[in-house]
Length: 245
Image 1 (cartoon, helix red, strand yellow):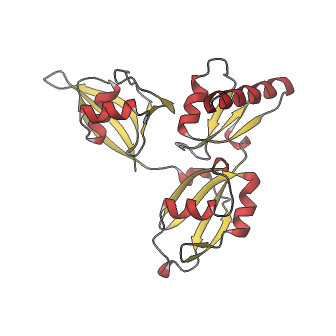
Image 2: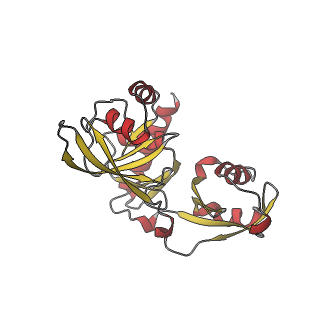
């Protein structure tokens, strides 16, 4: 049994347990590839995914009839340098590496958002206190940790409106326009399973996008399709998208 089959079996077990026992059950944090695998399983439908805030890449799957965002066992930890003036410039890799060095498994950790050299780490509730008690240094910078009590809406990423001109709403045409890629470059990324539409791996460049779709391109970024505004004199489409910044 390969890793995908093992994971599918795990999803089936969680779904069955939620149905038979009548309460919500949750997975660990899943990568975008793992979420895509879950979404491709037509036999599992009583679930929702959430990563602690809207637009999260790493998400937990909650199985049950009525799972709300507040039910998910997710905490957000604020990781702040004690002396910001003398702190190292900290990157995503720095924060993640320091947390992993505590002996914590990657599947217990979600996204890390960095604002003004302060990290906001989403993690499973079960390990939040352990991280707060033991993480005191990142690189050469002393840090303090606390669980955030403020609303998760504060961590939603900003969207920057952008108008693009494309021949159609084909996936390959749109990602070329948004990320300034060549057609061959877009094709290569599609074949490498680096393109996700609504958290699902999509290899088909001719897939037609629609209003409200979210597209992630690993290594490049993410955007939402808003609407086709109008046609140009050459019968090309002007499409408004929102690019995550």
